Image (cartoon, rainbow, N blue to C red):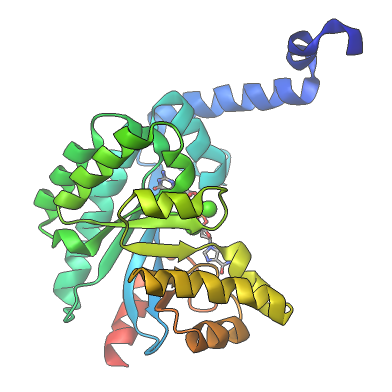
Length: 281
Ligand code: C2E
Ligand code: CA
Ligand code: CA
Ligand code: CA
C-alpha cells in the first residue's frame, strides 16, 4: 500500500471507507429527520456568577434517530454542514429557539429579558440566507433582538474575512448580539477580536478545566477574563463542572457561566422548571 501513492491508499483504507460510508448514510437519514420531527432542541442555562440566577439559555441540537437512538451534534452537525442541510436545519433552530424564548420571556419577565443563544455554523454565515432567517425568527417570535445571541466560532471566519465581517455587521444592525464561541482555541483569536465587533466572549471549557490545576494554568483564565473586561465584552465561562472552578471565576469577576455544575442541557419543560426556581430565588 505504501508504494501505491497517497490518494489510492486513502481510498482503500478500511477505516476511512467505513467512516465515509457512515457519513453518506447519516446524510441520507438526516435529510428526512427535520420533517420527521426527529430534531429537537435542549436548553442549557446561563447563570449570572454574582447572583447565581438564570439569565438565559443556549439552544443545543439533538437528533433522536428512531433506530440508532440519540445522535450528538458533534457527529451530525459536520455532516449537515458538508451537505448544506445545515441551512434549513439552522432556520428551524432559529425559529424554534426564538419561539421558546418568547414564551419564557412572557412567563418569566425580567428587567433584562432572558437571552437565547443559538449556534451558527460557517456554512450558514457563508450562504446568503442567514440574515433573512434571523429577521424571520425575530418577527415571528416578537422577542427583542438584543435577547438573541448568535454564537460563531472563529473557524467560521477564516475563509473570507471581509465578506464575513459584512455579514456580521448586517446581523448586528438588526440588534442581535454576537458571541465568539470556544474563545482561545483557535490560532487567530486575538486578530479576530480586532477585526470583528462582538459583544460576548465565551471562554472554552478546555481553559475552565485548567482552574483545577496549577496557579500558572489559572493565569491563562485570568488573562482571558481580563481581556474580555478590558474590551467591555460580556464574558461567559463554558463547561464549569466544579464549585472550585465557579469560585475562582467569580473571584476573577467573570460575568456568566454555563456547565454541568449548574445544569446539563435540558428538555424544554425541565428548563422551565429551573427557570421558575430561579424566579423564586
Ligand atoms: P458548543 O457550542 O461549544 O456547546 C457546548 C457543548 O458543551 C455542548 O455539547 C454542551 O452540552 C457541552 N457542555 C456544557 N456544559 C458542559 C460541562 O460542564 N462539561 C462538559 N464536558 N460539557 C459541557 P453538545 O450539545 O454536544 O454540542 C456540541 C457542539 O455542537 C456545540 O459546541 C456546537 O458547536 C454544535 N452545535 C450544537 N447545536 C448546534 C446548532 O443548533 N447549530 C450548529 N451549527 N451547531 C450546533
Ligand atoms: Ca456554543
Ligand atoms: Ca463553546
Ligand atoms: Ca465546541
